[in-house]
Image 1: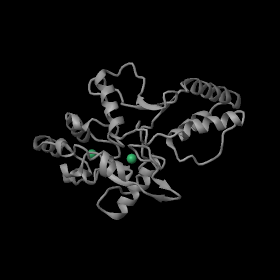
Image 2 (image 1 turned 60 degrees about the vertical axis):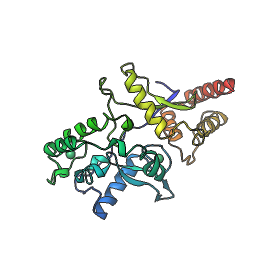
Image 3 (image 1 turned 120 degrees about the horizontal axis):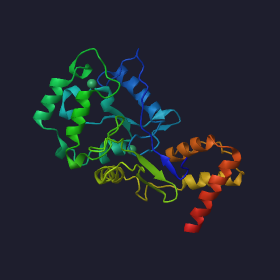
Image 4 (image 1 turned 45 degrees about the vertical axis):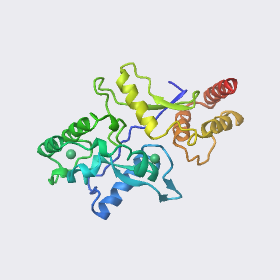
Length: 262
Ligand SMILES: [Zn+2]
Ligand SMILES: [Zn+2]
């Protein structure tokens, strides 16, 4: 197991069969908000900022492929994600006009969708083929090179899930180590990291090292506090599976390397 990276999540919202999801109706919207907050552990799906604070949500529902492309996208459930106001209103918006889908692409989407998007009763909970094809069209545009959430993205030729990891020693986000990624995949992931300013010093925190230090100070015990940081939360989950002794060893190693690097 690799203890020096934290794999950022692939979102899997658990939609319930007996509930209705969507965006237009307030009750469906509420159901959608609830299931997405849960899937994202209360963090923005794009920049990992905390959006659930003391039970109150600061998140905004947003359409992965912008809803102004087609009315059919408005209530297309897998196309709805949750983000912080900055991502939704600014980071993700950049270049929006330039990546508007063409009429032919929309027409193809309309002629192939068989789900609720097309007004039938079948509600997709994972992206259907029509939506995946539309996503591929969307990605033809360079201004659309970022991972749409919660549906995720696949490498165009590699067909590998595009994943981000947090590199603990380098204290930055980068593409996951997948030998099957090609240059295009790595550039795509890096464009995502750049767009959502994941490595911007303004947004970086020393919270993970704080956590590592607490583990070392308490001789391998897990600190019990609300860290409000997704990377720390995911790292803590990883550490939970280890014995106290192993935990101490891992955290000590990280701590020593970090200090040697300064
Ligand atoms: Zn965000
Ligand atoms: Zn569908």
